[in-house]
Image 1 (cartoon, one colour):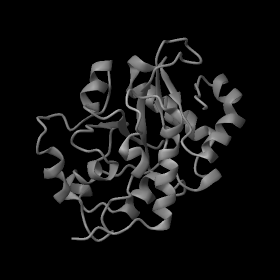
Image 2 (cartoon, rainbow, N blue to C red):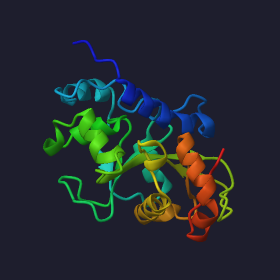
Image 3 (cartoon, rainbow, N blue to C red):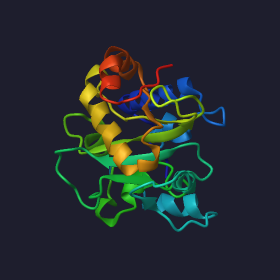
Image 4 (tube, rainbow, N blue to C red):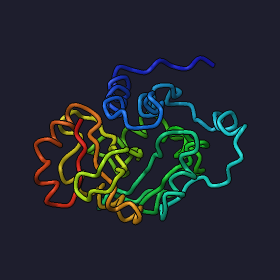
Length: 234
């Protein structure tokens, strides 16, 4: 079956998600993570599910852990990362309606099994009909968002606040330009990830992944630092 070309809206989202990792240049491999560049770009049309894609993705994988809701040590991150250079997360937005089966504060997905957010979400029976429009509504659109989505990537640099020798840079996916993310959104995601990755509280740092987020981070950096949020701006 021929896959649909990404719409202009998704093209803009894909470019925005990839820009940050291209600027960061912080993984052991030079190429940015494929999913960071093309989240949703090679997905099927909204009336199709993604279940059929899973066998091809896992045919050569000996993996039993689909996801973890907490990362308690660097080994947990490495387990989920596999051969990828980042790990994707889904997290609950504070105060938003809880939609089963995503009921835990955080979900860190196995990147060998699920290199894309939408495929991970569609692996739950309750979400097997997940479409790109659903994903945009539930994760990307600030007016309807109930889940945070993004990625965590090891960054070999001194942490700007704690002085730790390595950072864990995290992104927050959003659409809507300068209205897609706010300072308080960043504070909320930072606190969420720190609660779900207690070993990494002194290593996590927000990395803005598009020009609007970068401008927000620059304008809000002093305030964010006062609230204990580290920011990486390239």
